[in-house]
Length: 269
Length: 229
Image (cartoon, rainbow over all chains, first blue to last red; front, top):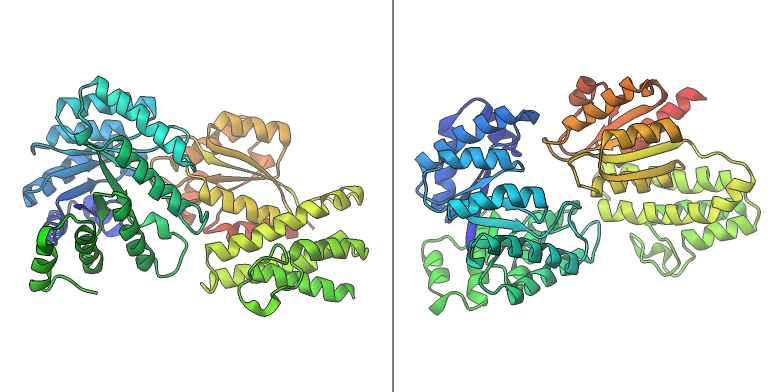
């Protein structure tokens, strides 16, 4: 399972503060800690500049430089704004960035997909259009189809696409766990070369003992075909469970990765 | 007799039991009539709809609100109670209309332009409906013109604006400015809510109130109602 470290995100108030204060040390340390905890990709989201596009771009450019100087890992350029993604990409010197994200919304697709093609980037594709997260499996798959068609037109191969099936809180609608799991299965069977990625925390919104709920859902999603996860790599229990999930789904020959991690003392229950 | 029905109604709202088949917070009311059955029974027994609402439904929701604030109840608990109250309000509607009982007030709610999050907005709408307000849900990604037109034509006393993103919260200020320019800002109290906003932000854009959660919205509206009477 590909681990995308989520910690450098301005929605976390400490990170937002560090970005505002240009606290290079704090952010470089956070990047390194995630890398040594086993993150394969480090997600970088500098926030929205309090509504000012100029500031969002300046923050994003500064942050990407700090993180790429600190770690030798591919970075995920994460923003709600296509302008920010494009500006930040110019500062990124790594080979294969992951762009986070596109949707089936035509405007967003048309502005970001060409950059994905040009930089030979990978891209996170959310299974939704302009109208929000569809509550039904069919509508999420229809969004995936529109995205795939558009990307194919730009010669972007399916293996560079990581679909996010999207997760709505189970507290609000108890059918949503199965909606996400079925969407994963369908994406798997329709686009066998594409990847499927998911954030862990949405499912448990509004419930007590959220981490327990998140971890259980991770295992179910792994069975359905999940192969990448956006997670806090410093959460040792979650990281242990990712190793377990790989092992139980036949992705860890001779249980090597699990046992290596165990011998290092990294597996906690 | 009617006292017993009202007390049972309140208890069932607290338990979040819409019908007799629903599983409550615990087993204490198992197999007994739920909110829907009790509301019908109260009407049949000629209990005043107003009494059913204030002494039964609203009184129950107040307890739910307290338990939610204390973290004893969670979102699914609160939604079950609110849905039960919503079902009771549907049963009471004809009786309220024929008795010419007015709702507590007209409340319009929208998620602002560029933002498509609807969960928080829907929870607020359900809860305010349950609290006796006439709720108009304008949807998600709503441009300021739509909001202004609604305020002009439908004359709600209250307007709720929702935004989850730091990129879209600024739209709330745009809406308030547009209400100002159309000279209808004074006709409507504007409440804001959502993960990105705060008390401070509400003051900054000239909103009337910030509501941290759906129960806060009920409290704020009820305080406006009290100030009126």
